[in-house]
Image (tube, rainbow, N blue to C red):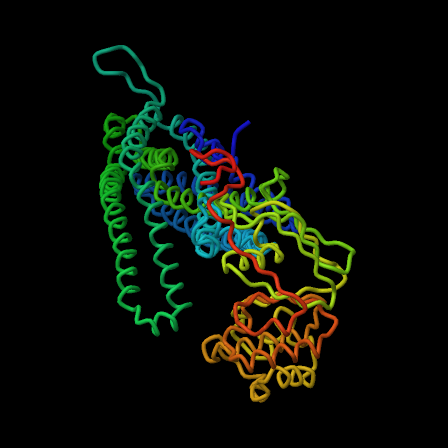
Length: 594
């Protein structure tokens, strides 16, 4: 059985089959989705229209023969008939191509929509978006993978599938046409007769082109993957600077950010130049290959025409059939760039998906290295033999037991690394460690981080988050704002803005308390949720909370002095002295203290 590491890094010989299995595992369920009959109908229609396109190409090939035969015979009436026939072929080609485009684009968008919703649904569930930050793996810039790589993978994959099927059909039909009309030729100096000689020449021409093109195009795959990764890192850096613009401006860190942006963009420039070099090789070869293609069959078949074996129409039909056949055979080379882009984007999407699967698999393992978080019928929070560790296994605290009853107020202080981890443990975001935490299911729990999340939009919606803005009447919202000491914001309830940018931290934290008053949870967990307050304001806001919600259990993580009197008891958590590891690490004995 393969380990996750072996599964993530297969041998080169199995890499292609491994990649295809991962693609099928991720994208396969789309074809069996809830609206599968609509999807399958669209796919069947797309295949039908592709067959129609191939049929029109064959018809055009025979029309080409008839036209040049009529020109050779100088038959005006036959030429006019072929002109009328071309008008019909032209109208049908336009109609079929337009319908095909609409069906293909619908399928591309629908597949992208389904895959995007699936990935976002898993990413934004059970705190995976947060837990992934602490896990090693190929899942950097998940937003870019969802927004850009899914688009590239789905759109280009369907386009490639269409052109592949089209090429296979063209191959099957034009092999027969070219074999029939090319006749046979005797090899000079021998008595060997080669029937359908243009067919093996087409295979030879396309085969040489494929081999040489693949060798020229191999660097393009690597450079394309590297460039897309560099582009994603550059976008992520700019987005992060935008999110933390206030802190950067206050610390005058613009020069550092510009330097970081220059370094990331310099990587784009390097990868761009590498891709350009790769493109020079493949484009130079493709240009020569394509320029020779229309001329080569005419030169090869010209002796047959000169000898009177072929008519002008048959010569032109053979030349066109040769081009169609070699084009079909050259599908891998013609689509090498798109294949590289699709492979790179699909691999980035699959890596994110697989890392989330491994995250869930690790969370389900009961190997003693995961904290068991449960809901229980008891009306109290129970923490039993809790060991909190860092993701690398380094133990922060162990043997912690605690009981918090409904309506009890507990102050937690000590080492910020330990207390912050405890906050995340209870919230289900920190699985590293051992022991058990039982959260009461007798009422909702609300977690108050240091900076509450305030989405952009109307203040009413930000205050009611994550519930709909219609969840509470205006009068109740205004009362909550008044109790939280920010009644001056009541007139702006329906005003849209970026509240995290326009409000000071103290006002934002007061909005967090107003949110608590609206939701009235049975359990409240606060992590430095009053650190922007002065001592008097902090005392007043906590007294207000206890007065308005006397039956709620409260666990307050804070390092401010003078809060003991506002709580029933205090717990001090400090980091374990020395170094101790929860599980065996390479080069270290199990639970070895240093």
